[in-house]
Each structure stands twice: as structure tokens, then as C-alpha cells.
Image (tube, rainbow, N blue to C red):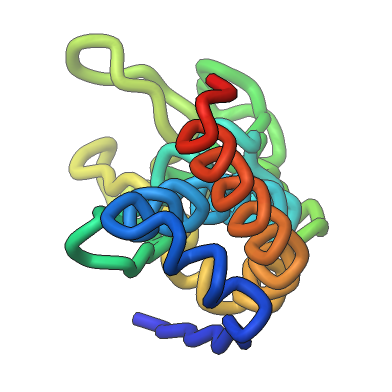
Length: 186
């Protein structure tokens, strides 16, 4: 799993953070959590573009481990198993009944084709891309693409860029918000 560190110069904020007292860690945690959510969105878009998936599928596998006032650290991580090939815009005759030219799918921006694969609905409505593993009709094996976690590692730069873009403005905003509450503004 990839790990990222971002160092921030806090000299400009030290005086204002001292004014906040106990509320300073709360403000910083909120800023980190908002930054993490923004980074998750950017990573979801980058991963979906790389893999040729819907953004919602990619975002579902990316989680944000939130910061608290006691622990000022936020982590954006991707977990998950390999995705079924049907999720990669697979298409072909269904049911194939021995005709057709296999199944095509999109991965990393390119449409590829598996000649002997077929799309079928098995069991309790499970739809997938399968190939036969023996000379007879059964057994069959479902085919899978890469995992979102693997693509996530390749797209780290998109998350780092979004974090750098958002973090400083979020910290500034949350400090000002807490100061306005202390002054009796809200």
C-alpha cells in the first residue's frame, strides 16, 4: 500500500491556532477530513478513467480514514478484490449459443476481445463473463480484470495534486471559522 506525506509550514497560523486553544485540533481535523474527501473524489475520477469504469464503482472501493482531534491524520486508501470483467463495459451476444466472436471489454482506454469467452447469467441472477475450462460444457470459470487498489497505486499523483491544491485553503477556512465562533459570530 502506498503512503504519502505532505509537510505544511504552519508559521502563518501559529498565532491564530494559539488563540483557538482546545478548538485548534478540532479545526485542523475538519480541514483534513474535507481534504481527504476531495482527494477521494479526485482519485475516484482518475482510477475510473484509467480502468474504464464508472466513477461510482471506483469511488466505492476508495475509503477515507478520518482524522480526529486526538489523531490529526487522514488516510485515503483503496481496497478490494479483482473486479469481474463484466464491469469493464463487456459486450457480446447473450446468450451466445455458439455464435458470435467472443466478448469485448474496455480496459485502460482500449477495447480488447476474448475469442472464446461468453456472457451468461448463472445461479441467482449473477451476470458475468465466462470461459469453459474443459472440453465439455462444464465447468466454466468467471474472468476478472485488475483490482481498483492496483490502479489506485498508479494514480497517486492525481491525489497528491488535489491534496496540495485543497489542504491549505481548507485549514485557513477552518481556522477563520473557529475564530469567528470565538468572537461570537456564529
